[in-house]
Image (cartoon, rainbow, N blue to C red; front, side):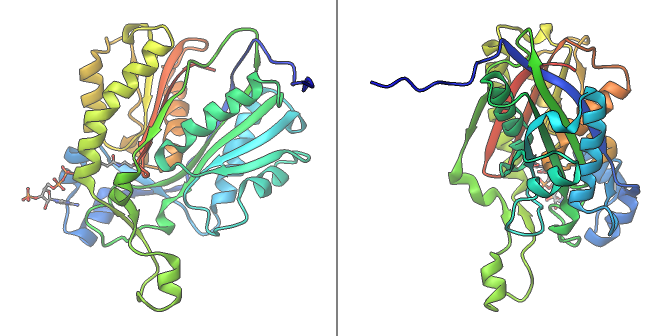
Length: 333
Ligand code: UT7
């Protein structure tokens, strides 16, 4: 039997820097409501959203990702050249291939990194983060850059009453690096492909190209079905991630769930009985649901408000199309 040498594993990995980019254009509920026979009051009461950002033409997916990542790299106080891998969680890359990660890496001046996109929708950032953490811990790379970026407006139908008011655009990024302690609890993830239709596209691109459908595909969501699934399943997922990290809900400094709906967040917060000492991310209020970008944007907002103490444990939770979910306790940067 031959021995295959492995890279020397590290003691631990942790998040060492974060960044965010929010498009400049603020879009209020009042701007969207007339398109879908809705109202500011209904949208606020049913979701917690006051406004969201919509990207302008020059705020491309790539551009937003580069700007968020530039801040994260500066925050980490490292040089781009130290990054060995770039992971981009997104479902709005405007082309099916190539992945957007290599172009972003090149624009950031990272020489020859591993670079790939992660397609797990609203859970994508947490999937990508745990993958990056494992790569750093295993010694595969020294630093990993993880980006969640979306231009949801590219796939929205602004006349669809079930989704037009929920989504927004933006990008967030984390840098993961080596640490002399363990900054990541076990990842708890899973999927349920039997509910793939719950959040999907109105048709395939091939149906559009062959003329079977007259319009290009747009996002479509069975809101109630996803809501019920999230409320009934995500409490257990969150609890499992906390327990797997050897902690209890009261030990956390912050809970940063996917920003899908404040009522889903409320249900999880109530079921886990978080004390007031746990900061709850509510970035949905001003950002809407930015799919793979919600978790890094929400942590960025929490830290700007002084509610994310460095080194303290926080629970990240992503869930959405697939259906997919992922939860992990991390040490705050
Ligand atoms: O990021 C991926 C994960 N996504 C999610 O987790 C989303 C989960 N789902 C949701 O957040 C919610 O289901 C929505 C916010 C999408 C919808 O809220 P809801 O409370 O489930 O609304 P509903 O579909 O049950 O509709 C309730 C009422 C209905 O009227 P009646 O039958 O009670 O008279 C709808 O016709 O609200 C009406 N309605 C609306 N009214 C104004 C539905 N959509 C709208 C609208 N504006 N846009």
